Length: 602
Image (tube, rainbow, N blue to C red; front, side, top):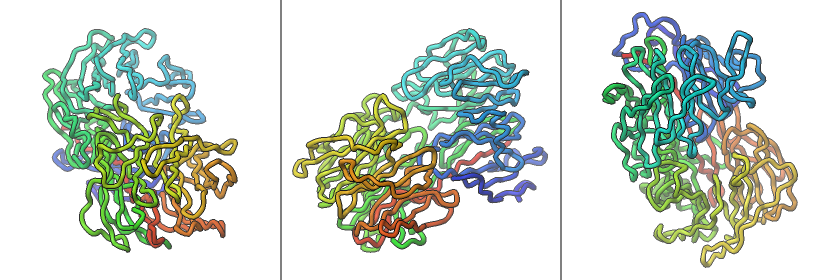
């Protein structure tokens, strides 16, 4: 019991979602204002990076929570912890977005645009579908901004039919109305990495700078205003302009805390601190709510026949074995929302023949912006890796100067000798070598095409120089959805290719690099990039798939056509890589928890 309320009741709700619910509704009588924060709701999505930015929106009366996640919005009843789809949908077949208005009604986003609850039912709102809107407290006006991934600093404030446009000198990332509707506050992010806060007249009038030189967020930065309108709450890494170099440093500890800002003076005071990202504040009555990310990633070893995962390296993910089995490479730099992926580098650790460490980890592939774990060529000479390499420090994931391609580096060579293999990538996946070290598979979105749909490519490599001889698209069967990584057989010229069919539905295929002899082996469900690899004899595939609401490892015998579950438990285990001796599987072991926390407003 905590404060007289039951906690820790475990529920499994829906597919791919494990919930720990603390039933903490009811009055606040007897709560100690100096007590530590309490966790009132916990969600553990069975995803990898996809839910890092997901946050809770709390109903004005505290009766429900809306969580936006990779597979859409879910509304949870605060008293039971159970999803309430009827309240979320309001008679619709589905929604793409939803949030609570000040009067407690839900604004819902559909394919046709935004809808609001009115006297005659759900009514359309003249707000663009790609906008992030917030109605004024009395509902007579609206504020919204559009797009945070590219340009688009425009802010709209005022009556629905004729809002005033404001250019604030940076991309708008968050907005919040004062309780009396007299002012709107907006956070922005400039391309030089500096965040600012503005106050705009509630009728759409003049905008004034409240404070600059902040270390804030490049994407959504949900804010809240105190009941008296004197204080603004927002997530920041710190109260001073960021160090561009620090953004690219793994394990720099640049998590977000929540600060209270005096709206007249701009003075800041930290109110929520500690390890892990704290963000998306919300004030409900006399309570202060926020979202907290409790993320834990480790590289673990699993016996080839299954069993418990033995942890090898902490704060690490996406393992890869060297061909001789003496090293495991991995990615360091977690999913911190302030420097999303900028701080990722590839490191390695020496291991013995059972996968135990022989020393401390060390850098392998480093540089500005995101670097993923490399795949070694079969002879161990070349490392191929996905990178967003930039020549200088950049301020955010989509910043000009970043790349998005496959790079090669000779093992042991300085980073100055890395080779950019491709120049057309967009959200490129991880590469895999064929058994002769002359070809690489990788996939990439297509620029100008739909987001989230990857297409496969085969690069032919000159092993003497590491240069590309040719790069050609891998033909796919008619109706094939999109690729989600692949692995080259160690004994034949054949690829195991994962197809994303729709939602969590996936399928495993075998095909040759020219697209011939394609055959679908089996279907399965996965809520993220589960990965796939072969055993050294080419007879078995090891892959990640959903089981009992968690991502786990499975083995599929090519000869028998039967899957076997290898792991189980409350953690998600993905990205399997089989050792050269065929005895061990290295994998990412993830526990990504999103907590809704609360404390009395002080």
